[in-house]
Amino acid sequence: MANNFPKAITVAFENMLVAFDGAIDIVEHIETYRMDPVLAERSNNTFWRPVPGIARVQDVVIGVPITFQTMNQLSVPTSCDGYFKTASWTMNANELNDPVQQEREMQSARDSLASAIHQSIIDVASSNATVVVPIPAASGNYDDVAACDTIFTEQGIPMADRHLALSTRDYSGLASDLAVASRSFGNAKTDMAYERGVVGPVSGFTTFKLNYAKRIAAAAGVGVTMNTTLAANVNYVPVATILTSGQRLNVDNRTQSVAFNTTAGMAAGDMLTIGGVEAAHHITKTTTGRPKTFRVISITNGTVAVISPPIISGGGATDAELQYKNVVLASTGAAAAVTFLNVNASHINPFWTRGAIEICPGRVAVPDSAGADVMRATTRSGIDIVLIRQYSLQKGETQYRCDSKWGVNAVDPEKIGALLFNQ
Image (cartoon, rainbow, N blue to C red; front, top):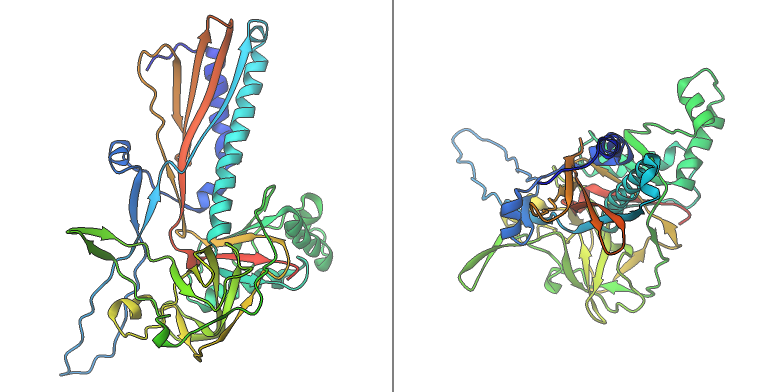
């Protein structure tokens, strides 16, 4: 591609890239998957990514044949063009005399794009989190984060690479408790909290302070119930593929359409539990004794809504059900009570384990010899940044745009949680 940028702009662009990774350090705590740009375009920028499988074990008795299981490799769709952002500006003949102004505009573009990437990750995590931890009081102490550790661990979610992003006020609440409760100055943990408001690792989670956090409204559903008997077809059976019109198609198993007595007042994003439906350990499939938490993804009509994750109780005893079983029906009934967890409006503080969320960088193609100067680079985190410059003879000004394209996907919503305060 044409590249006739003066050295001052080239240096400014390189400096922007160096600082860009630091501005989106959260990307280093999720997976990155890069599509081949040609294949991406030919597949409508959508690929199917595998969901981690769970093999079942069985007892071995000498002389008794073992049972060979049918493995079901589920997958989810991911896209590399869910977000296409640009930061653009113009500089006239007077402004171009000052190279410092050019560098400032580059820094501004960096901050804006980094913020957009950061926001997209937090939005996806917050919108798809299904493991809900409601705290009655405001953010205040270690126990709040320990509750997230507990619910993850008891459901068999890997202990490594756990991360928690907190809204500014909720993060400050934890830092305040750490600075006051310990009263041990000269201790690095206390000093960092007191002097810089830094919490650091807590109960197995790397913590981040957000300057932007997604909010959830208070639930408005009243008197909502669900028929949880097997006769009501509430048990979901995972299917890797289906055959439709002679074509073998992948199936997205992250959601399920279920019937309630009413969806009046319910809204996408609501968090809930269902009476008698308990969370199962992902590996052992035994009950945790605690209610399974769900998210409302969308409202279909007056009695049907889409929830995540699906209710997989293993009632049909198929290999797929037993492999991905996530609940134990401790009791069933024609009118199991639905309890909403987002009692009050609140910030959503997402937490996750690495691999549950994936970013997929895209590629912005700019044609050769199109009358524009182009610079392209890839950050350490895998994000492509493209700087384009063109002079407008009619207006007598130079136009700049800094582009980036990417997608973010919740690969496994059952490994993404939401910590809510003041509930």
